[in-house]
Image 1 (cartoon, helix red, strand yellow):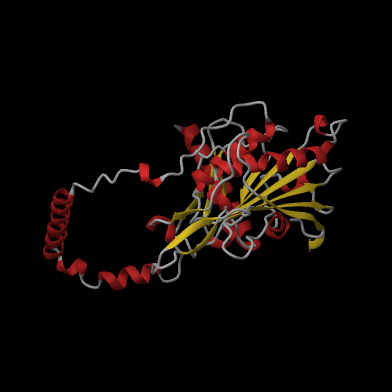
Image 2 (tube, helix red, strand yellow; image 1 turned 90 degrees about the vertical axis):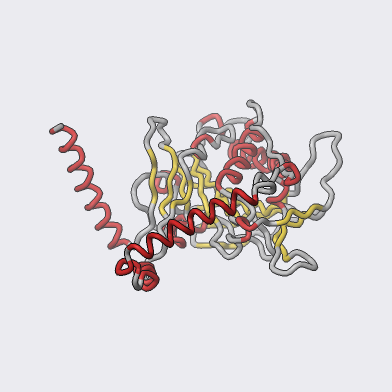
Length: 341
């Protein structure tokens, strides 16, 4: 089901939005209705901000010849998507309260469910301005990420063609953290990219079957009780030994956390985001846009493969200027210190 073209933001024009459903391999039946219950560690993310990523690509000369150019690239991406979604079918599901249970949620997949896939064009800011290590305005990047459709959707994708001369692509990904963590979402993207490229083996597919998980603590009640008792004794001794230190400790903790959100890191150097290659080259730049809403710091492997780390932050312009000066001073000091040693 495709929607009519619409204006989305300044310079951005949405061409179409299609619901892409899972497609089984040849000879296999369609997926039946399935419900996957959310565990405690999943449910704690129900109210969290979805993770938003943008992958920037520069298209080479080979993507603009008789094979149809960028339109052929878009077709290959869309045609290979159902195969990847089939392997990761919970990403085509919707979150809902579990029927007949209190405070329980599940991912429900029903026939006809799918992932929103949007194709757009941008006639303003180009890929060379966006795929850089220099600070950029959030307003120029945020429209490249779609919104999650209403009704409990957990994944949406948007591919935007960028200037100059349609030589850039931006892949925007938004995923609900309760349905998929960073390992799972990047695993899906690597699988989709390999299916699109068609010239390499797909990554090992996920096994979505919680009956295979053995509860290692099921027969260890006595051991758990003993360990908890030992911890309790240690805490009791510490409290009794230094009463002045522990007096008012609750108030001190609350005071320390009153004005500042907990520090967190989004992403990992192990996700290999710069290896998400759909057949037209590795990303020129990858950004986690949602850090602007969560206050987290993003982390990824160095694109050059030299073993470094890419770190991203979002700050107001005046704070960014201060941060850049402090970073330059710290880098210069570290460089001079290493030379002295």
